[in-house]
Image (tube, rainbow, N blue to C red):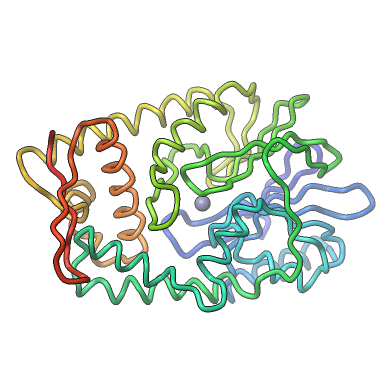
Length: 334
Ligand SMILES: [Zn+2]
């Protein structure tokens, strides 16, 4: 257990909560609230394994569940939000998140959701082979239990406000592109940033297009990064990997990465007329077909880039309306 906990200045605990994906873990942070207890940020994906993990962690640290006085979620993704309700059940603490994140939670996993149908249909339009469509649908529906139970009580916090936790009055900043309504918490005094998944070290945060969501998430992401770049950050506490201090350099690398990615995709399209799925396979390899989770992220990311390339005049979209479930959208160079 101890190898999964790192103590930082001010008694903060970085807790590496296990994930069954290539990301391996998500960072939850425990910030001490003096005598009162702790605030937990991004408790993780709800699985039997993560429940057992937290039970053991609380035992090994001699912490009572009631010592958790507040639960904060940076964004709605299941690996961050998934255990919020489970934590609330045990602690009675309020869950804080942005209004946009809460809307997404309801759209993706609320009663009678239609999102798994909509996303699967959209990916089929973009060339996902029909035989993978069913697995995709099942994969999406499978997240419902990994985010249950949902918190009964959610309190809202928005960019532009201040938020007090861990004895610090944080500036709340917004980030877009990776997740709508993503929150970042910045302390100007100590130059600390709790960054969620907006700016990650080593890995480029997934920028995924979704039907009915942000129409141009890559633009939103790049704009967010340019805006966030003005913060003076001494150390960033990210949602994955370890805290780091190369903040502006990392932002510049990410900005660069996406320009290079778009150029690479234009090159791959060449003189052809390709679906997003075909571009995705050229980019990431056909082995993706065997991993629905990774395929979904890769394809959503590919579409996000194609949409931006279209807006920049690099490519055009060709729509052939066929039967539902058939690839209807293709891309060629301008
Ligand atoms: Zn995320």
